[in-house]
Image 1 (cartoon, rainbow, N blue to C red):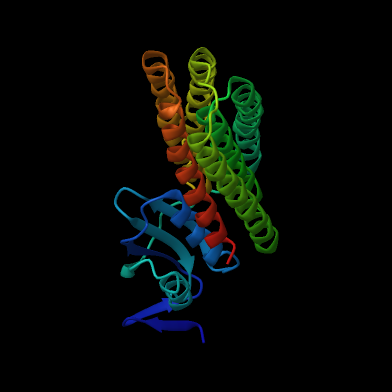
Image 2 (cartoon, rainbow, N blue to C red):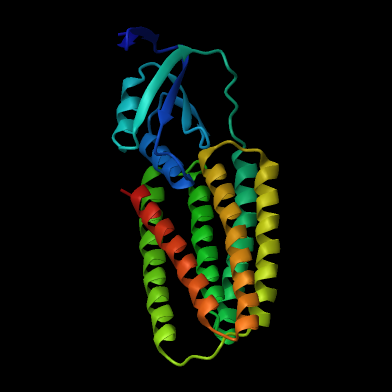
Length: 279
C-alpha cells in the first residue's frame, strides 16, 4: 500500500509531488475560494498556488492525486490535470498571525466606509452611494470569510458563507426595488457634492487596503481574492464620482440611478458566488 498508481505514475505516500491543473473557468476570486473550500480537509495537500490570469493551479501534496482531481473536477470548471511530478520545492508555511492582522485592518476600513456611505447616501438621496456602501459590505464579508479561511474549520466557513450570501442577496434585491421606485417616482436630485466627496474618501480607503494587501505579497487564494475584490472597488468608486459629475451637469437623478443599478448587479453576482461556495 506504500505505492499508489495514477496515470501511469508510481506515487509514494512519503514523497512530495506537484500536480498542475488547467482550470478554464477559473476567472475570478470566487472560483479560487470554491476550489479551496472543496479541497479543504484533504490531509495530503500541503499547499495551493493559484495563477488566475493563466487559469492554473499548482497543488503540492503527498501520495495519491486521484482524490484531489476528483474533487476539482466535481466543480465543473472545465479542469484538467496537466501533469504530476516529484518536487523538492520548499513549502513555505503561511504566517497566520500576519494574515489575520492584515485582514482585520482591511475589514475595518471597509466596515467604516460601509457605514459612512450608507448614512451619507441616505442623507444625500444618492443610490450610487448606497449601492457602493453595500459593495463595501460585500467586501467586508469576503474579508471576514478570508479570516475564517486562515486556519478555520470547513463547517464554520460554510455556515458563514451561506448566511452572508443570503443577506447580501436580500440587500441587493431591496436595492433594485428602491432604484425602480425612485425611477418611477418624483424623488429629488441627489446632492452631487456629497457623492463626489464621499466617493473620493472611499477611493482613498480602497487604495490603502490595496496597498496593504499587495504589501503582504501573499499568493494564497483567500488573500488574492481580497486583493482582486479591492481592485474592483476602485473602479466602482470612480464610477460613482463620474455619476456625481454627470448629476451636476444634467441636474438629473438618472446618472445616480444607473450607477446604482450597475453596483447592485456586482453585489448580486458576489452574493451568488458566495452562496456557491457554501454548497
